Length: 405
Image 1 (tube, one colour):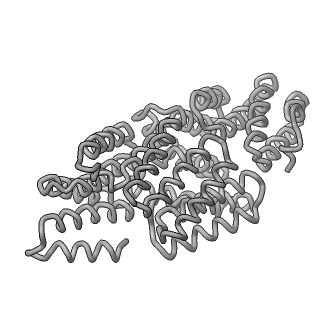
Image 2 (cartoon, one colour):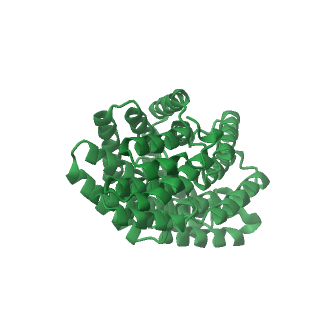
Image 3 (cartoon, one colour):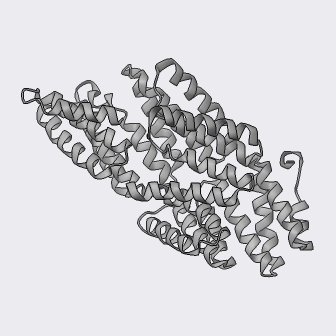
């Protein structure tokens, strides 16, 4: 991407460059700056490109610039604004001759924003429509993108086997087309699933593949998730200080670039690790940043993440129970399970076995549904360590072969 950016800037210095080529270079510059984390530069380049492309009547370039503008807003966690921009762009593309404006995958950008807003069914529909448009227009390079984010929708919805099948289909398409945009992201999520399911060998292998791909290609969409996966693997190995350092570095990368959309994703794990290593100031800063993102958007998972961070910071079972209630309004079972586990643990630590039991049972049932054996085993171990008879009974109740670690 850095090489591409240099070439694009050099191209634009030619005084005889045709207007449409200049607009194309500016639009591509916006995308390159976006991937490199220069959101201000990306927004400026995309705005220039959109004006030039509209003046030239080049519908695909208008769509390219519009998509870049929407993705800047998405990454800044201005999710409502991102959705408005991309939906305006889609209306323009629908009116373009032969739907030429859809030669840039606008449905893909819309689907991403809908996923962030917990509107999973709408996201899936948008991504399926985009895949069909891509096939109709011969945009084979875009098809792996749609497969990746259709699989991501399944991951968020808790349908992990379907997600893994979708990620494999995306990898197969990527091998056919040479499109590598999302490979780091795919391997990072595959690592996270394997980790939750207790398959540390495959989690390590996927994380290593993600890191190698990142070293080859440089930063792209959510490539920092490779560091998140690595941090959780380090924690699983008992290297808490190293895990904290890795995840704190990942957070700082997001903060430096303005990638606020990932604050609610990384926040709960970073607050938890920060408290474990005695970094209370960092935990407070992270909780405040997540709360700010949640306040600016209407999505259950964002509200749940903010409350979970606050509850972990304060050790408050009531706040953590509020996080459970917030997550329960949305479609993400993994986050709901982890919040219920946190709330049950906090209640048990304060001697509230009656309050802890339903929360722990809820966590166990969700972990079992996901076949997250490692998470389920952790809840059982915590119950045993608290020596709480009622809590231990909750852990034992409803356990079946699917939850065996």
